[in-house]
Length: 173
Ligand code: IMP
Image (cartoon, rainbow, N blue to C red; front, side, top):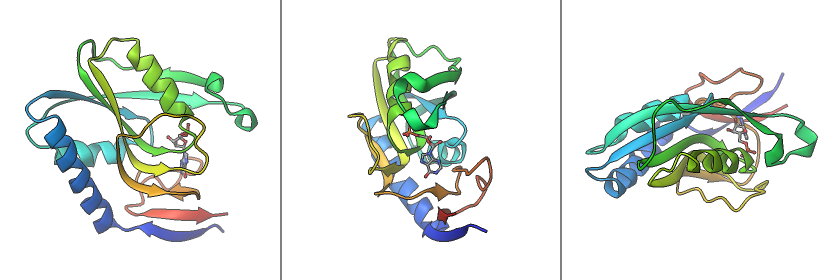
């Protein structure tokens, strides 16, 4: 049976989202912003973040990538599973991720989205996990930074389990 150590509790998640939403609302004040959630993990974060934004005209879309060949992780092992539907040409885009680990998925997705000619692309992550970063991609807005560990809950899964936990836990197998 795995062990679950609480890392971020419900109220703290709420507090961090309100704080980051305030910053994003200021940065995009009165403008239109396309939020692109990275499936599947970002669905809960996106739902909460989007509802906390103020005086920003929001559109929402989703994208999904998957990686294969886990022992030789590189951006070449990443494939697009679901593309966006909204036309983002000339638009301000915020990619919303659950957790950035190596950063390879995000680098791949940002590069793909740049191809549509948006006006700007920034990245927002619930958790910025630093230890295994393999790219120079920057996280513009992060709720929390952790160094390492495998986290579950609040959208984050282990083999599709635990996404619905309202808090975030460090899972030790
Ligand atoms: P990256 O390409 O290494 O940055 O991986 C990003 C993706 O890996 C995230 O969107 C998650 O789906 C998954 N991932 C990375 N770390 C964790 C974790 O600690 N818990 C659950 N999923 C994770």
